[in-house]
Image (cartoon, rainbow, N blue to C red; front, side):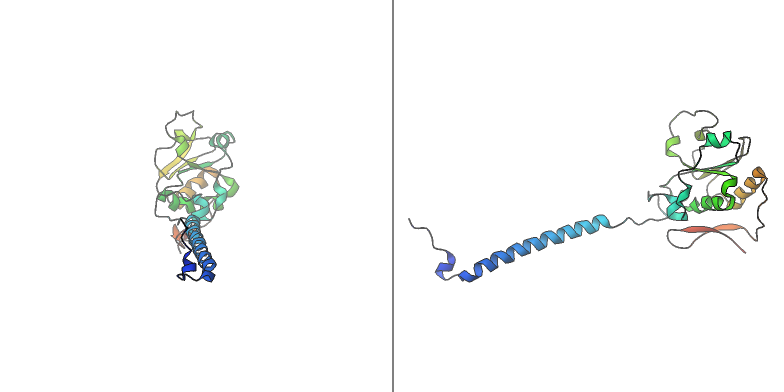
Length: 207
């Protein structure tokens, strides 16, 4: 039995169009693959939008929301700071907490105002949970379970200030001034935190 004749030999499809048709199909398939890959890559590359208003982890909150990534990791532990008899300010916070994000500029302002005069120790609270307290120099001994929380220790290692929430920076400064013996710079008004874009805030003094 004879094999069937090719379609082009019967005059149905011109023989000179066969390579062109195969090339067009190949190019069409290749283009479809490239488009799928581009769509996938663009989806992967799109950054998650950071926001002060949600409890989502965006990264270092001090770098993102206060423009100051130098606050973490802290340069000293609480045990070392107390052993050195330094006035110490411990800030308990979480990176995936909107209230901590809003408080980040206050922590940065404390570093700007007091510099080397105090030991500023921001601590995430995750490692402090569900474990035994290891003595009076363990920061877990002073965390009350809320965030943000500010605890100030005097040179003798005694807690002299303990407040939670959006603690007023002027109240913190007053206690630090008393504990260090360093007079505060004259203030022309009370301080407040002001957002200057959807990510960042700063502490300013009202006139």
